[in-house]
Length: 225
Image (cartoon, rainbow, N blue to C red; front, side):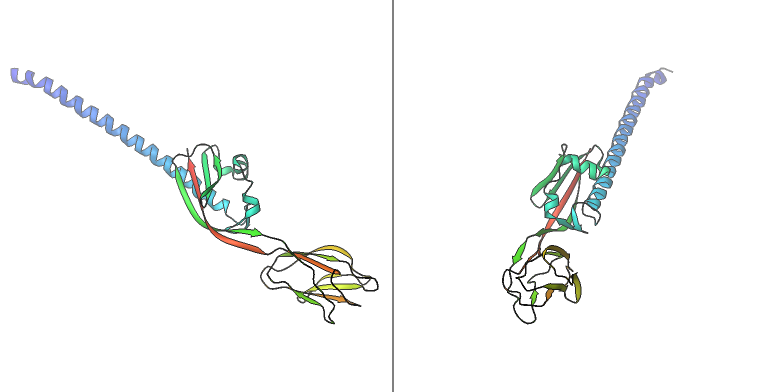
């Protein structure tokens, strides 16, 4: 009987230790579960944002996975949350190459998704050709998706049509004069031909086209709670 009574304190201590270990273990497991859920949510949002940021429907791209340089330069934190509601009120940072494009909040950790993209920059090139030959044509040195044409033929000369390769892009039997914007194929070299009843000397035609330069970059999207 005395021995049984002496073992009671030891049993109580053992039960206390077991209970304490169980509580601590459950607490650690609960925290790990919550952290796992948070990490999974961060990753889900980071993946979704990175996909939409570079998608064909993104207001920042020229096409899928190709940023338009003039569009990405001005985006800020407020616009990011408006354009991509999936962000919510989370802390987000977007980097392009070695510079930060957007820093919305305080992303000190979180989940980062990286994608290789192209950045497309457009420049304008103006040509003032002498088209006085009997078959006046101008082949643009580089591809462009559009061009501006200024027609100012000399007195006594009428320009009735302009073709881009085999396609008529401008026509007026009474005569074309002034400035016009035309759409071109960015996938093939364009030759412009001018139909007129007289010589088109220098100054009669001015063509401005917009070739592109592209460079490869890495975009990194970080989402934090």
